[in-house]
Image (cartoon, rainbow, N blue to C red; front, side, top):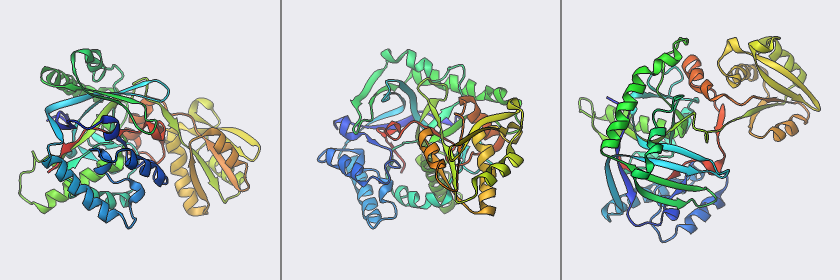
Length: 416
């Protein structure tokens, strides 16, 4: 059975799409005004803002009331016939980003039986970054009584030869366009085409062949190969998995093989798409003697030969030094550094923060008792190899674009 399948996808019949589509709920968590603007913009219209709980509200007095209202609204949307159902279909999506590049993907559903978010997972579908277990229960409270799901999950394939999504791109003019709009709050532009019938079968055949042969690319690694990796929305997919496992536990002996909760709606994108940009996330360590930290890092995880290490720059005050993180200790520079920092800070104290911008890191490293590690951008091919070889990677390993480039809610699927 395929781990990525067509789904019965729900799209609104008449809602204005520029008001329907709302950015992923885990963005702008400290910007309550953003979500107030979104709600005001969509007032009086069918909109996904009425079907999701912004994580800015998690843990607040509003959470319980808003969750109940969301579940009620989902039921009302279904009863009122808000949705068209596109049975056994994919949606091919093109998202025009702020810089003009077009990110391409295919929306379908993944089999949660083939997914494991633990660090040691060997399943066909895995998390790229370590899951914070404490973040799952609040999300379970939102999903467990929901009638439908709306994905902001982006899954990645390591498709060097571009045999999966790109052939769909080539035939898009023959497909039925099912939505197009500008996205609110400077989110760019989005278009969706329906992939159905013979085109679904053609994709399924190619995906089956790709899956059967994917292990050949990683033959030099000891770990089990994987087919799909979570790029964005890791905790949302982990929540779907947790709800499904709870459903199985509550129904021993019941055949749930075709239950809709066994699957989760996602968008699959090719890591080698030109629009996919992996930006490094740097580390700043505070509250310790920075020269001591550097000396200890050199002794523990650095090598003298450039060819044997990942190049990184270290900033202390107005000093800058290049070091080489030992490639023998991991497939990724950030993994080598973070594994060491986790143990080091546990033993020595100090604080750590994660910084996206080079200039911001340099400015912070100029402060007393601070040291900044400016990490190289990760090569796209390193992601799958890193997870296969080392397990799920440390949190804040990389960033897929900026906040406004995260996925917007458009498609939905019944999970009851």
